[in-house]
Length: 301
Image 1 (cartoon, rainbow, N blue to C red):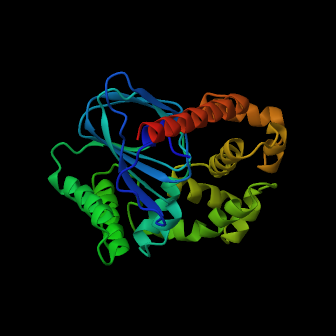
Image 2 (cartoon, rainbow, N blue to C red):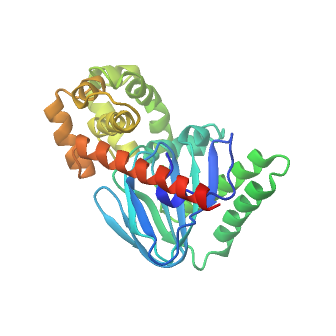
């Protein structure tokens, strides 16, 4: 579901695994964006104004020219959008992986669901980066031949710039790249079996490592413990179910691999700042505001 600020979209790309648009609710007295999350990566560039971006465990003050990259599953909101204009780019992590670049594959573990901003940088004096974003905008507006190739090229260049600036984590050398490649069976194991019992010994065996060697390699390659990675994947699925289904919270807890509903609630509260019930209600309220806004816009038009 789209947020309130996205009730009027421009430069839509229906049928594509990515979208480019501007927020349209930027006048005085306009409300902000209620806290929400989604399953795609989101790049925000603040073109005008100043605002606060609230994440799960931190708040960022954004100034004109600031660009942020939010990971899939990162809960975020903007309390006040008055006089702000955002350029927004959303795209699927799976589509990013399909770009066919081994470098992108190496970055993916760092783009897993997390409670932090993946990148926050000013591009006020970065004309090359602004040119890339303008190229993306032109592609979406004009829809020229080979549009997907052009968009992929611009995104690859953008990620290359973020990596070279040390903003997005990236393997420092070929040894780190080899570590990530060796860990791919473990990543797949978690994605396919998050709902059941996950054993580090099994993951290590799939990667042909001892438990000690696997644990050390996983942390060196991703900056996370294996248990942290499991928790993020489970929370991502739990949040998706809370928003998109009427399933009982206790059932969601068990079916996403948590040991008990109380343990699920404890972890969820620690990671998002909300209980599962409050998170579901907030998103239901947000969706109601969104649809009311859509109806109002359609009536006025």
